[in-house]
Image 1 (tube, rainbow, N blue to C red):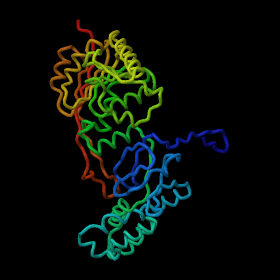
Image 2 (cartoon, one colour):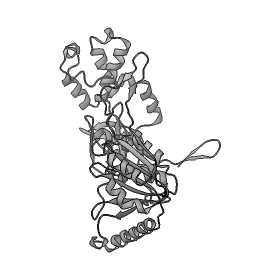
Image 3 (cartoon, helix red, strand yellow):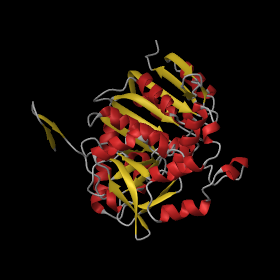
Image 4 (cartoon, rainbow, N blue to C red):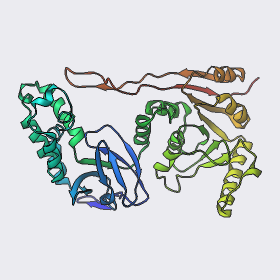
Length: 389
């Protein structure tokens, strides 16, 4: 804990511990990587390789990669150093790609690739390395101010030796998996995920049923909104749940990590578990889930599918939903069959949403859409169950 002078204000400083998950991002970089902390782990992100041991028992934040005996290790940053970094960020972002590119501009750079590698091996700070590359560029002074900034930004992406180790949040996890492989999370972007939650009306204490095929991303969002109250029944096929790394990466507290896994598509007698305690706990959660569903206490049904027809899930869960409950379905392909099925069941407020998303660069006289970006997404179908008269 950190106590500030003046009125009593206590800040809880969260430390990085072995077994926790962190989101790693290179300063000036675009990629996000989720990693579980363990000793002697080597990390590679955007051509920067280092051991993560130096971050253990340190607070989340900015770290510097320092070369010690040819080994790259992390070292925490103090506030005074952080102020110095902010004033030289543009200079540090200038030495990456041009020194290694095979274009005409390479012949106008006095600093060779061998000299760059030698400076890195001797532990020369990134600020000095970038400054040398700027000085060695014969065309830098001829560039416009915009072109100089672009040149500097390109260099930093490769030669920057600073990384952020961030505490996992829903936004960071969603961006990390979407940028790495959008197909694995069914092309579920962060804006579509927020739209799903908004349409569902989920709140603290809600009782939800979730069937998803996006690595636990939707389940993580639901657990975050529930805040340790209510219930989240996670439906899955087979004896055990499919991989849900997004839930594991969030490092939920025990009071929040209360979601019920219920095997809806297989007979309970077929369940086997090597641990009697785990089996007893599993059966207890299944009985609790079955009790909520049999009593019609489910308020929200979430479905996010890739290769399973949502109608199959609707047919098996429709009778367990109470009146005025909300159904929210996401799928990368059009939901014609689910739309007509809900209409046949006399559901109301049946709406289909297809959102377009694109990031833009907003700079004076240089505002335009980002040329290289993922814009794939899916379709959201929402409805409300009512009694047929």
